[in-house]
Length: 215
Image (cartoon, rainbow, N blue to C red; front, side, top):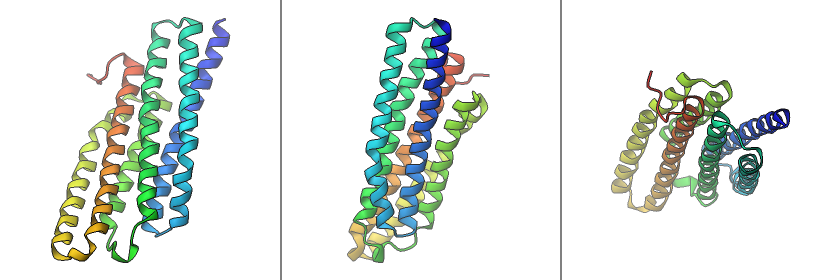
């Protein structure tokens, strides 16, 4: 019985890694679509959200099956419970990557101007998502805590992007809508960073039983 349960836990582990990679790819491709002015790529990201949603539902069903039918011990139950929380944040990351792609589909690139700040912010967020998944794979408490600590850098980028766009709106009323679209993209990136922090917190919980690493 335990051998079968361990095999299902291994499947859960692999499915979580796959979902994480799907989310990471969606963010990277959505941001690439923005910086490369590629509406075709944005459309692909927008359409791919259903794949992430489907994977999230499959993992949720697996977790519930393990809880209901396998009577897991406390440490296993903690891992499964953390997985249920993590997939919620992963699914929302997928949604927000899709939201960014949808904005890119309708963005007036002629008025977009310099995207360097948003591109740097996107790189920071992609690293956070990558590292929180790596922390899960490696059971790395230090890396999970680094993801949480790194959220301040993303918040700082959001403030810089917001300030720059507000100044641009004041100076050039005609491109106000485009500036607001870019501000929304930055806001979605900030939220993705928050979800990466949540995932890192659940990685810490899965390993230690605590939401914070209090070494």
